[in-house]
Amino acid sequence: MYQPKMKLTPEQRDILEGKQGPTKAKILETLVRYGDIFDAPELVPVTHGCGHLVTSFGMGLLKPVFRICDEMIEAGLKVEGGFTMDPRPVDYKNVKCNLLEKTVFNLIMYGKQKDYEERLLKLGMVPNDPFSCACYFKEIGNIPKKGDVLSWAESSAVNYANSVLGARCNRNSGMIDIFGSIIGYVPKFGLLTDEGRKATWKVTLKLTKMPEAQVLGSAIGMKVMEEVPYVVGLDQWIGTELNDEATGFLKDFGAATASNGAVGLYHIDKITPEAKEQGEKLLAPGYKEYVIDDAELERVYKNYPVMWKNKEKEGNLAFIGCPHLSLKQLNEWTDRLENALKESGRKKVAVRTILCTAPAVKEVFIKTEAYQRLMKTGAKLTCICPLMYANNPLTKKRRIMTASNKLRTYTLARYYKTDELVAKICGK
Amino acid sequence: MKEFKGRVLAAGNYKGECIVSHGGLNTLATFQSSAIKHAKKVIASDQNNPDLYGKNITGIALILPQTIGSTTGGMVLQVICSMKINPACLLFSESIDSLAAAGAVLSTVWEGSDIIVIDRLGKEILEAAKSGGQVEVKEDGTVIVY
Image 1: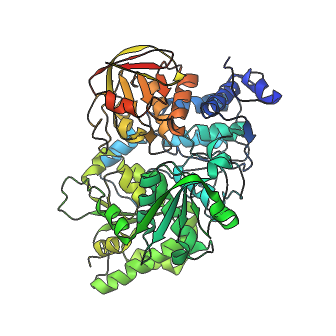
Image 2: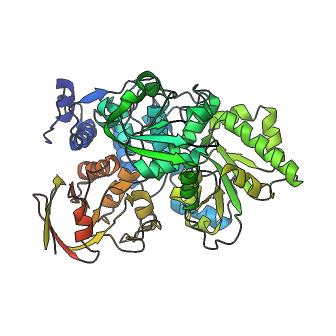
Image 3: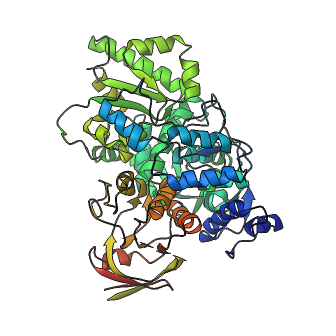
């Protein structure tokens, strides 16, 4: 039997010794070994019962994952508080694919989707179409409180929960997320500790105009990598209240810090909960400094590589909403596209354009008049993950444009600032 | 010849070829393409990693600073270990990151993998070792670069 370095309670030791069955023993051993690597002194209870899982795609190659799911189901294990999931991979109605692409998606890539989702339901997935990377939207309702301990994995959701909601979660991998949710404990290290939440970078903004959330996040992510930044000067641009506008900005900013670097937590002076309470006391001794001005943001933006085979050609597909768009952002994008079409004298978008949002947000949005206006522009609305679409090797022939730095990082998509992307889409 | 000593996370002995990634290894981007094709070897498919792109990394020692990218990373490592197309060793110059750590543990506990994992070898190993060169790894965490 594995000899843990951390201290376990008698109940946890019983589980590890197999007194509650071999599957539970292996799950606990995984969590204990994982924590021991980071010198975690103990396991602490998960206080926000609803989990969130990153592995939402039924890819044939995930045989070990399916095998473990089956073993857990066989052992009668499930997540008592339920869990939400990252987005589904395909939606042929709104994200049209040719026959070859569909063949690759259906037979090679995501052919096990239905089987996988059946397993997830048995393991406790909440039943009302909970597929979104932004599970913390109020329309979905998986919203931890400040100080809650989580067992989540999706990097942008972990980043948002830690930073904007003040919850506590490490950047866990897929499988660790469901293991912690089933056992109800996670190892205490890193971002679960007060010390691990101290900022080791002070980032000072000296900007003359509102920054693009995705470029600012990218610049900070690439500089600090997995460390914690404390950002000063953003209140000038997004205010000090965590309203819909500010949280939308921070969602996109955070996703860029997490994907262009490996940031699990950031503090924004005068805005995010811990920064509001503690201010610059959150800075760790010996912190490093990074000053960002307009020129630095432009430098970062200009250095993004263009991965298209034919760099001279224009894009022929646009994805907006990675992470998923909030209701407010859907309304903003509708206005943007409508106004730009008026200016260009066009009735419909010049490039196939797909907006991505959560199923629960879509349900609300389609009941509003803005949805009809969006549909009139010719844009489509889906709930998939555009990363999973772009992972299909056949889609690499398409020249995908995006205003998402996460999509740019993981695929061949080309990044454009919001205004530039709108101009391309609307033929301005 | 240069000797390094790291922290053993999964012990084992190895002598043979190495490959070096000077930047962070994006696990999903590197392994996904070969895994989807059920290939017998991983030909690294991360176009943003010029050190590895297009090269075989199965069965040899992979020297890297840390892993980066999607939080599916640990699970992806588990998958390639279950397919037995994993690198023989993961030799980290830095402290292992949480995603690779999860991958190492998942592979050990659930797949019975014999992948060797050592971290905290120091930045110098990234310069001392050359792709295509030889290394010897001992179960006490010693790595000799020839």
